[in-house]
Image 1 (cartoon, rainbow, N blue to C red):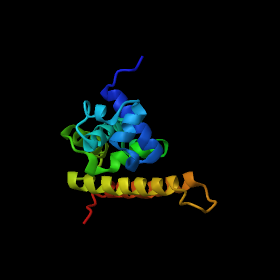
Image 2 (image 1 turned 90 degrees about the vertical axis):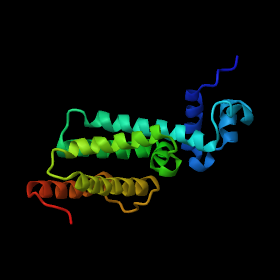
Image 3 (image 1 turned 90 degrees about the horizontal axis):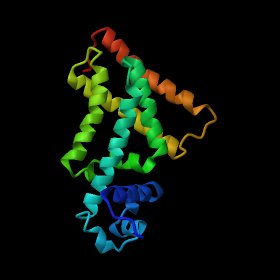
Length: 193
């Protein structure tokens, strides 16, 4: 007996393709084949490829949001930022396809998906409320931290670090450089100009 095609199954199939082949591997045809149906049948459940990518990005971002939220529970300031930084990195390494979808703003077509992005930023903003930063300064800091995490993790995933020094130590040193600057600015009521 054939399993009923549900949105959950469609998302699962799409994410399997994303993890194996990246976003470029996602097509209506490939997803239909993964589900064991004919491509025209998939249009009974999604409008088009853009809709398919949006619902897959939505799930990916929800997964990332839940990981970051769970990692930060009960922690404050540097400890919370360290925990979510490590979880962000782990998510990207363990789910490179989902991570790629979570970074592709151009595939977030629905308001619901865009709202999840805002919820992810809200986790960082809540932690940063403990520092003496304006909302604008907090957004700048989030961008810097995210850029560090994204760059380091992509280099790691793509085996871009060839020297023998311990990778975990390099990650920790870089993260501490970013966080120490935040702490010193907060303690001095410093402003980024």
